Length: 179
Image (cartoon, rainbow, N blue to C red; front, side, top):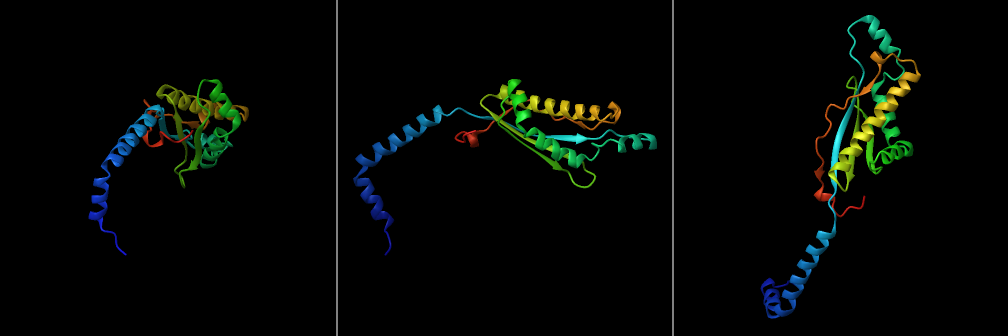
């Protein structure tokens, strides 16, 4: 059995007084609901983790004694630390949003590691503030761990925040997503 499209359109045209109000009502209702949903602002960033550059054998020996020198492992540990309730609480206490996504990833052999960070909040200012709080908190904790281990400042692994986002983008694709 096949359906004749032209016959269906003729029936719809004869019932226009029912279909047209439903179409207008659905369009107006959809527009009204979309106006009540607040936009989300998002930053997707990568924080590279790096060891200091050494140009002598003595400096290389100093750096090799740093227990935090395996960048790939440290990036994964910092990803777990950034995901901990303790760091989320510190971010929230600083005025940021504790609902973010962070993972630590090894960059491959000899390429180091990175932290992948996604922050999504209700305002661009809070999104940027949350990003800064996470980056600063993890950098402070990494530095404190190395200081406690007696690593001299010149030989400490750092989070390089060289690509700090200047603005948060509106995340239109996730307006209806509950975060």
